[in-house]
Length: 470
Image (cartoon, rainbow, N blue to C red):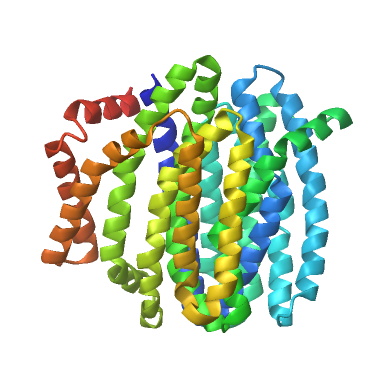
């Protein structure tokens, strides 16, 4: 039953994330082509600044709300009302801070204006009810919102972005996608449960805010880990360098979104329920999840590293080819993050917010210090190198803090998939072919080797298929 629920949840979110993120990625690729590295550097810098304030405004309330709804049988509408009211208040305060920050930032006026436009996304994000549907495991509605967000953004970019003068319009279209997703999920929720309104419960809101503090810090620092590199490059290097790095890193964020985020969203509600039911069952579930995630992570890193130049050449104009090294390095951040998400969600589900918080503080400090100290010397590869180190540090700390799985089991689960992945990589090097043929060939070789090494049995494959179709 656990495998069935996880498989359905994961595939539902995985497919919707792939579709939604493909539209979003296409929009970013189009923007990069029209604006060139310099304009795309401005756009990416402003977007990342807005994202940091977005996660500050969220304050961990989405994660806390998902866990609360998944674990507690109670009045969903009351939880939604209190958390949504909190998020709106936080969004208002953070938007004011963002405006002040953007005006004080030593950047040209067009970049400051872009930051403020991206900051408007704080308000629709405050009423984005993805976390509610994650908590009740209605993943199809979460997927609907994510697909709509990508379609609206990409559609508006395709129709209206035709010249480098349309920087601010591109930012508005990005916000419009979030507005569309928030609107559709709010409409679905209102039809099922009624509109989330009512009087403010100050004691409940206060206790909720206090409980969310460690999650807020972790969530914000996670955003720092993934995106602070762009800000550091924006301070030390020209906009063109920021654009080159951002073009390659957008592909990595795309993979993080449909692999890591989908995985975390799919497994977290079930992990929260399982922990409350039985610690033994909880530990067994973690081991099953680890095996599945390791099988996914290994070929992503090896295949992505080998095919980086072909991927960049397929998506971007030749001037972005020099950023292929960024993709080759940054893809390993995805691999480490896929491992990390298991242990991170185990800590949150078991209400071990302290270790979750400490781990992210360590990783965030290393990210900030590393990027600020190395960016002037190493240039555009700095965030990739620092990201690998920070994610590794975070993974090691989370593994050491999680008492439900031994290190020996982690190593044992990694060995055979790693061998299969290395042999797959060798085959790709020895038999060069076009990008799509190489991807298909690599998948077939890797899966065949997994079966040969008995890392994945045919019975397990059949079980996953049944979980989807039944």
